[in-house]
Every structure is written in C-alpha cells, then in structure tokens.
Image (cartoon, rainbow, N blue to C red; front, side):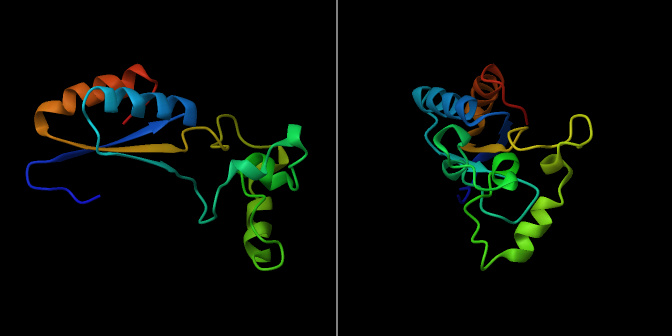
Length: 131
C-alpha cells in the first residue's frame, strides 16, 4: 500500500484470523475499504495452516503443529526446519506466555483519511485487536 497525501495508516494485531477477518468486514461496512490482512511471525518462513490440521491427518511435523510450517520442503529447506525445531514452543517447554503460533500473529493494515482514524480504532478494539 502506498499512502497518498493526508492519508493515515494503522497497524493492528489480532490473536486469531477469525477476529481479524471480523474486524476487516466491519471496517469495510463502515466504508473503510483500504485494508490488508497478513500473517506475521518471528521467522522468515512461510506459514500455512492449511497443511497443519491434525484432525485431517495433515500434521506431518511437530513444527507444523506449533509454528504452521509443515509445508516447508524438507529436502530444500533443511536448515530452516532445524532452526524451527529448536524453538522452545515446539518442545512444549516454552516460557510462560512465550510467543507461540496464534498469539498475535495476524496483522491488519488500514489506510484511511484522518477523519476516519477514530472509527477504525474503535472497530479494531471492539474485535479484540490492539495497536
């Protein structure tokens, strides 16, 4: 996204993709249409929870379950998989409130006019987001 003159941007973090999507829908209903949804994390790896559903027998790796990374090619990205496996959240011996997958890994970027910033803030906070 590129900001035009007088536009403002807000970066909001959510604990779940469901809450983020609800906020996006509410923002669009309020007339704020310049919205982008992204997943963020500590690692430079692609996160795809489509491949990490243990109920559908798609849990190929422990890192897949805890860091949503099972679709990383094991033959090409061996060093990436080794580093992900070393993360404390994978072993289950992580620190209390350690940033495991799903903590606040969902980012919604909002671009709007200055007069709509307060409205956007209220909508985000109503849906569990924080700035």
